[in-house]
Image 1: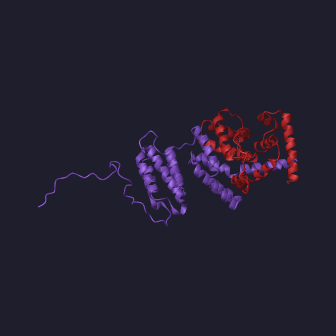
Image 2: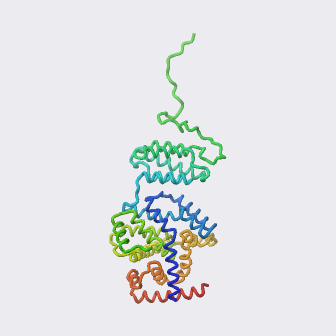
Image 3: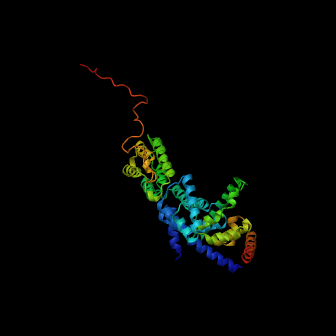
Length: 227
Length: 182
């Protein structure tokens, strides 16, 4: 029996040492902090992975898992561990690269969530709350539309990424909010077959801040003389 | 090729100093064993417990001293502690309500373990699930940590005679299960 046990033990050790997990671990350390997926996205990712594994099983499932999000929950824990001791935290440039990676992978909603969590100005700075709300609304909008990779990043996301890239060290919360609102309010972000019904990009959404609600106030002017 | 003792000592020293590459190397060394152990021991959330394990390792690496084998054994010891914590937490919030729909679903463990590339571990888990917790712990620590019986006795805070007996009974049970899986 000892021989049989030794054989099983050797097989299991070999499996453990050769698992994709080791690669995932190394990737996690190399990347430092990874996108924090919210509960909604985590659940979706786990469900997707489970469905894929069930459908294809075996190595197909394992290979998918290496790139999928479910093992990411473990990576998230590892990231926490490393950041706790100041390892692997690449700062805002790395966070932005992660946002880009998510968007390019067809996960624009997750990208915006990650930007919300990791890039916005400090909460006490003007516009930060507005930017947070607008980014999350845009992420929610994208999630509702269930945009796939084939649809490409929704309109307005590229503008937001450009702004973030060019102003990474000095982000203005209100500027981020405006760009995010453009994404959330842009109906052309929907599936291609939908007819855009939103305002054109260059028309500001809602009344300007300095215009009070209500009927327009008559503008006084010189009396018009009639002949 | 396994690392030399000098290699390991140098990487360990670098990791203690916060070197990222050294941490990558150390995690690569231990991660598969840690997750394999957690899968075999039926952790409900092996990824989460593994994350907690690594968090502890990072926090306490400065107190660790030893070679590669000791490092793997140390990581398994921490994983076992975190697993016990997770079991306690789960038992506190356990609800004895089973949704009938869940009974129609495939075993959640099977799906997750396949996703982790731990198919062999999943198979052994099903066998160890039929042993007592102590027997299964002893066998799993032997398998993944390659711990000696005195080391296991020390880690589990049990007398050596008790651990020897647990291993003996566990192996006997395993033999019967392997001979007659049904």
